[in-house]
Length: 112
Image (tube, rainbow, N blue to C red):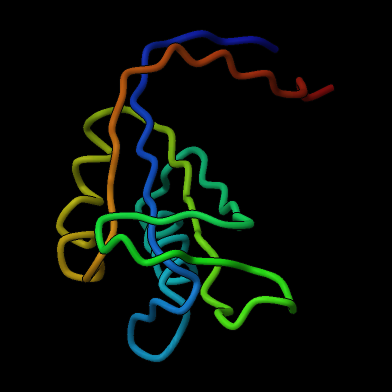
């Protein structure tokens, strides 16, 4: 089955060392998205990057920093994503959120 509809995408950038209530921040955000029944969430772990603090974040065993850049890509309707924003306001101390309109094409298996 194929369905197509307009949606919104959030890309959230922060560091792997960022925490919320003792667990990795990305895990807390994914869990909250699940509670809100948000359609799609993917966590990406980067090799190297920097953000608002201009501090270089690196992954890998050869660098001194183990604070790899993290990006979450979250896709759903604007209304559902708006419900997530207060949680992001509460949990993200340093990072960046980019929002953009997207056109979604969702493929799913049909029930036989």
